[in-house]
Amino acid sequence: QVQLVESGGGLVQPGGSLRLSCAASGVSFSVYVMRWYRQAPGKQRELVAVISRGENTNYADSVKDRFTISRDNTKNTVYLQMNSLKPEDTAVYYCNARRGVGTAELTYWGQGTQVTVSS
Image 1 (tube, rainbow, N blue to C red):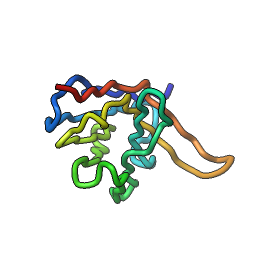
Image 2: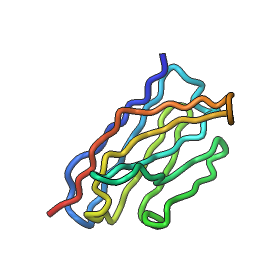
Image 3: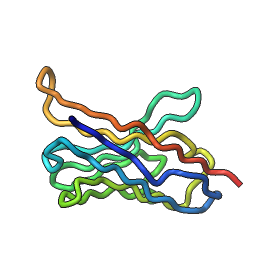
Image 4: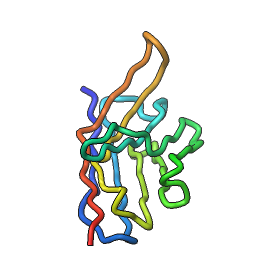
C-alpha cells in the first residue's frame, strides 16, 4: 500500500520559516519525480516545486529564492524548506509522487498539511 504522509505545517508569522516533510512508503521512492503543490481557499491547486530523480529542481515564480525542495532517497522523504514566508503562502500543501507518462503514469498524493502565515 502506497502512502505519502506530510508533516511540518503550522502557524508562522510573516517572515518566518517552516520545513515540510513528506515520507513515502510502499513505493520505490528513488524512481519517482516528487512535487509539492498547494491549494489556498477558493483557488486551484498550484505547483510549487518539483525535484527530479537526478535532483534537478524547479520552482514557481512566486516562491523562487524563498523555498527549497530536496530529497533524501535513503529516508524515502522529500522536503520543502520555506523561508521568508508571506501571508499569501497560506494554503494546504500536498506532496505528489509521479512516474511514467500517459496510460503508464502512476501518481500518488498525500493528505496535505496546513500552512498558515499570519501575525
